[in-house]
Length: 167
Ligand SMILES: C[S@@+](CC[C@H](N)C(=O)[O-])C[C@H]1O[C@@H](n2cnc3c(N)ncnc32)[C@H](O)[C@@H]1O
Image (cartoon, rainbow, N blue to C red; front, side, top):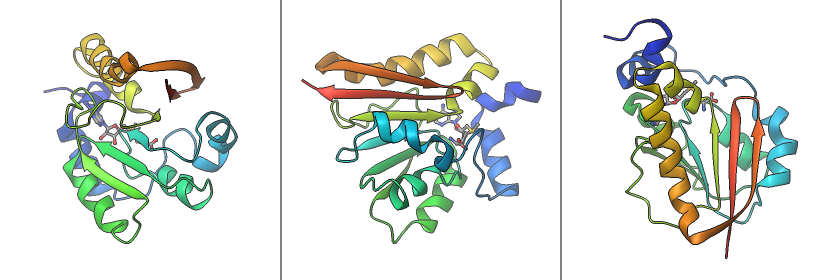
């Protein structure tokens, strides 16, 4: 069994953590701090995917303060997804799905204009098979790129935004 930071790549670790710490909690930065860079690179009139969303209030901030209208959140932890689905059951702009970022085949290509990660790549890099898992995550995200022209990639500390514009 993985121990220490290695456990950050394991779903059981996150299920336990979210059971014991229901949150909300934002890793690294809150929406308000990142809003200038988000607003700069992520147009509001598109579907946005937030991977490894956890129990962060980041996506709520995107809707309430940023005016974003379609924010889809995925996480590998069923505990946190159940809690967030319940919390935001009356907020149609926010959707929560249990999904592994390493296999997002449930989505069709060209579904999202932007993909945002804050802390999930870091978690995979801390876990076992970090290179394979991080590569798989990025391949899954880049898979959308086959049919799009990539115009910009914004990197901010442990947060990255892949911003795609349809050709
Ligand atoms: C460091 S937390 C960041 C949470 C949130 N994005 C934030 O900024 O506060 C990492 C999140 O990634 C999720 N996660 C870890 N591995 C994952 C995977 N393979 N697929 C989807 N989510 C994953 C964890 O459950 C956890 O919620």
